[in-house]
Length: 335
Image 1 (cartoon, rainbow, N blue to C red):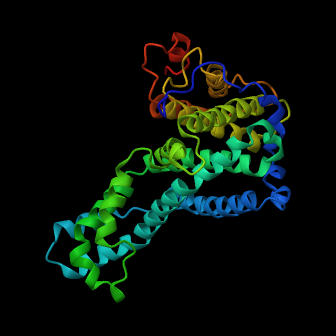
Image 2 (cartoon, rainbow, N blue to C red):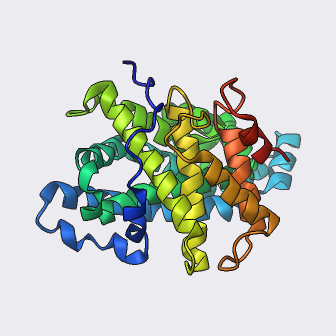
Image 3 (tube, rainbow, N blue to C red):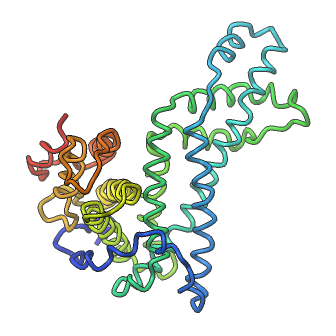
């Protein structure tokens, strides 16, 4: 069985109702890990990465482009003072881009260990709420970062400018202080050129489970994908639960959507087939009702968020145009 030949059948995702209570804030309490050195190490490592993820999303969201200054510098290549000013103006942003790239490489290394830990305990996930919540947080982060990045093409344009002038301008910076040297600039440029860099990071981490120690080969990848599918079903039910406060419901919708996208990108058969263990139709109907303002009375409408999430499923998945995708899925995702 290849690493991607999994995802069909009914799987073992039917117990998701038992996990709904894992997602209030109290679920992130790591106290239960005190007697589990491996779990404690994983939790501490993931907590550090997730703290950094908050900064990275905020940095992209608050990104300040200075297009006019860069254009002026390109139009006056002999004005050395203007060249220095334009290049120096980019340095704080370049440092933030590097932080995001560094986070993605660390996440790619650590996430397979978290997945394997949870897969090995998949029959009693209720006993590991803190780590399951961290997996959900990673999925939410990947979706949030990529959404913010897609809306700011200046990120990639500015980094390209930086890379183009790096060799000439770096020696002119105070103390030669640049965050990204030439050897690394090409790698980060390729990373930033991806439309969904963090989603692809999570996707690759899932696929690499079979290569990790105690990874279980292709079966380990399938079990990790099933875990993501389980999160999709759980968070869909959580979003529909009467009385859920608005902040938690919106969190659940974001995790649900990211889970659907990741499942589709890793599974050989995708998330849209009738045999998928992910209740994709229910997930999409939940988003569609939210967008149309016809959600249940216990929910407040979040139409812009729902539209964003539907677009994420529409444009970030790989199997929507497959012949096996039912017509009702295409209808739910049509404009």
